[in-house]
Length: 212
Image (cartoon, rainbow, N blue to C red; front, side):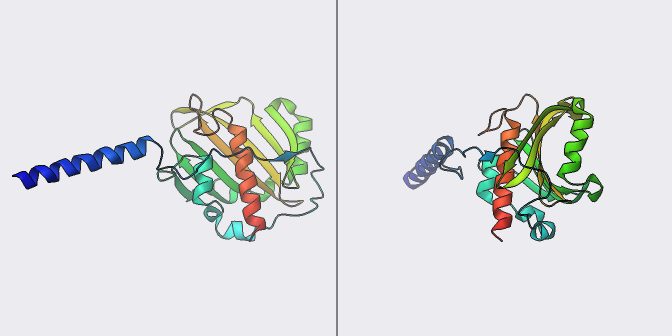
């Protein structure tokens, strides 16, 4: 009887310690919050001076982000984040998703989309199609940060807000980073700044592709 009591007491202490560890955040992957992506001033959309190789991305789009990077972008720890190949509107893409924590799609838009210079021309012809538009550079590549107009949209019964970063990988190809979240939700590390998540994803992926 005494032995059973001791075992029960020991089990109770273990459960309490485990709950304290989780509560104190020891289950997190990151030791500190991620820093914002480093961006530069706008540069010409074409020609792209140092093109980004996309072969390894096309072969394995979901392998372009590591566990710590997914934790920084979506949820920390990222155990419940689902990653899957995504093909609607893309020649190759991956989507990382956890409801309310956020959804990130990284992909190469269909060839018919054209390069970044064509997107810039579309903005000049119809600026009202965008509620946010900022031309910039990231890791030496031309890029645009944009939000459509209207800025919110309905998907599967939820109202979402999204920010997209389009990077000129080559003169004819874009690499797109689109982060969306339920409009009343906040990111763990980025709050309501959806564009900050998309830009950080771009910084991570460009660095990883250039390192391969």
